[in-house]
Amino acid sequence: MKQILKNLFLEKTLKKQEAKNLFLELSKGKMSPTQIIAIITIYNMRSPTLEEIIGFKQAIMELSIKVNLTEFNAIDIVGTGGDEKNTFNISTLACFIVAGAGEKVIKHGSFSSSSITGSSNILRGLGYHFTNKEENLKNQLDKVGICYLHAPIFHPILGTISVVRKELGVRTIFNTLGPLLNPGKPKNQLLGVNNLELARIYYYMYQNTNKNYAIVHSLDGYDEITLTSGFKCYTQKGEQFYSIEELEMGKKKIIINPKELKGGKNTEENIRIFINVLSGEGTFSQNEVVLTNATFALSLLNQDSLENNYDKAKRSLKSGKAKNILKKLLSL
Image (cartoon, rainbow, N blue to C red):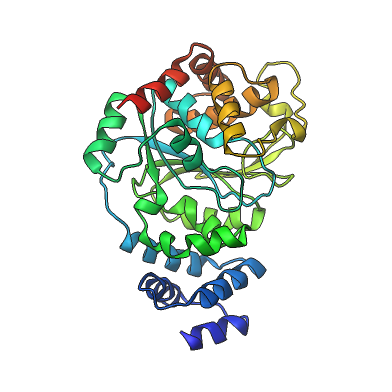
């Protein structure tokens, strides 16, 4: 361990197996909090390499609690977080809209570490009971169309470092790894990334998988499609730039002020925003941003046009179907 830390402090990178072994050691409780902080600090000062990310991911997934949900053609909509923009919970809302449109969603998330409110904070606050039981998760997907996988009860290693992450309160290597760790292994993923360098690393990684994906990064720094700027999108078809004008899809001109996407000051305020949007009472800016993310997720699943999928997403929200999905999920 000392040699690995020494090499890292000397700005050397780890090979895939070394990275995997590092996290396996961490999982066994063989690292002190000081050593964990040192590792987190190193990767806050430089981005992990592709080999390091793959090694870290392999270790965490090898240690995870296993569930088999591959019978479902499902999607996960998730962001790395760490963009320090304090937006409301856009990705989680988009998940319910997609489920309301008749698709399957396997959402993976956790409590907040670098933001005010994570998806787990929202769902727990609404009364959702976290589970890692495969039978229960399949029942939710069958009857409702969505299930939620709370990361810490699937990945014991996250419990080891959760206190350190919370105390630091800033983006860490685990923001980078989080979107790669969905235990349900959904076949489709809309992944938001907070910087272009990381977006391209994910892109290189996903090219060697059979996952159907879209990796998005708003050029003004958001890890979601926010309509505050154009954004880059990476798929199996390559890299594409979307301007805001291209996303208007026949609607009136969209000009989103970043201030209109701000989340609340605490979890209670963010839950109120969440319910307001899902109830069709969100602001124009809130609705459009959530609908646009849902639109891209639907397009991954059905290969239909953005215009048609925007209409599907809008019907899901305005008809109350998306909110009804939440009600059903909480009633199980």
